[in-house]
Length: 119
Image (cartoon, rainbow, N blue to C red; front, side):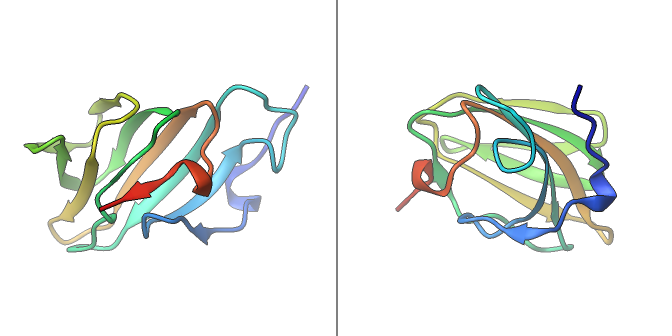
């Protein structure tokens, strides 16, 4: 059994510019097919617009509000929203309001810098 505590995971900056803490992935658990991380953005911050050739992602908003852009379509997102990001779709999330935007990011296959592509 593997149980990881989020508070014990070291934050780092991903290729898209968000700060994440890997909760479960191949760097800290015997994970093979997916990854789970907590991401955060300061108010007004955003990820760099990008896509993944292989990974399907799901974002789950834990705190805050933001704007999600997916292949040119924008939508407001808030606590409790889940967002599906299929492989190959350009995406960017922006933190709105006065508090940090915190969200879970689930990737299958697991997130990797090598599978992150930019303009």
